[in-house]
Amino acid sequence: MSSLSMNKVRGRALNANAQNTNNYSMWMEPLSHGDYPLTHITNPTNNAVVTSNGVKNVAVAQPGLLYNQARLDVSGSVNPTRWTTGQTVNTVFLMPGDTSFIQINTNISSGTVASYTYTPRSNNSKIIVEYSAMYIVGGNTDNTTNTTDSFISTIDVVGVSGSIGKREQQFRTGDGASNRSSTIFPIAGAYNNSALTPIVFNINLSRNNGNDTIQFYNMPYDACMKITEIAL
Image 1 (cartoon, rainbow, N blue to C red):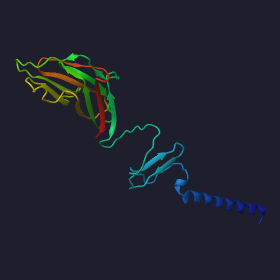
Image 2 (image 1 turned 90 degrees about the horizontal axis):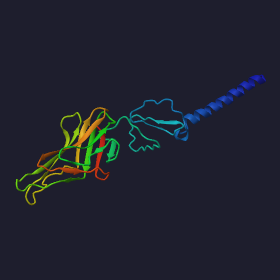
Image 3 (image 1 turned 90 degrees about the vertical axis):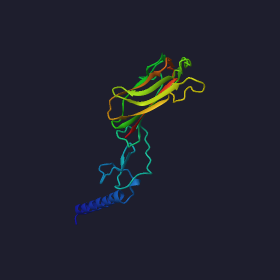
């Protein structure tokens, strides 16, 4: 056999040995011992976990398995577009002075006490509104006419009929009879949302009976509003 033919045989043998080594490292070595580029996932499921180390991708897709014990560490922010039922979509906590949160600082008998425009993150959610305020009721009950002073507070959605929250506070005449009721604040209510358009929530006051007014304040420690959006 010529030296040229021997070189060919030797080269083929070396290539075969190298190929066998590569095949072994690819298929026989545990996957956890190496990094491989993600090109395709066979039989993917909704329960598959896909992670990335920032350089190469690692995919785990095992049909029928639930990853209840998995932990996901994220160094950046998470911006989901879908949520499970009951999951918190977004939370906003507001105080007087915060952008777009309106809180009055005056005496009124009826009118809007506070207001905020919220833009939902989900088009299928329940938006919970909670509001609290410091207030002082002026005047006193009229014992001569036996008049009950009464105020009603509501949470209203602009453009939607009916209130999503309501409280009433009464100041009756007679010893020990005053304020045998709920108070107008704090108040809470919920709105079922189906769009991504901004929603205006108003906290309103109305005098139901009597002739007194209520003083409200707008320092950061005087009032607050919390909006929690949860998925349906």
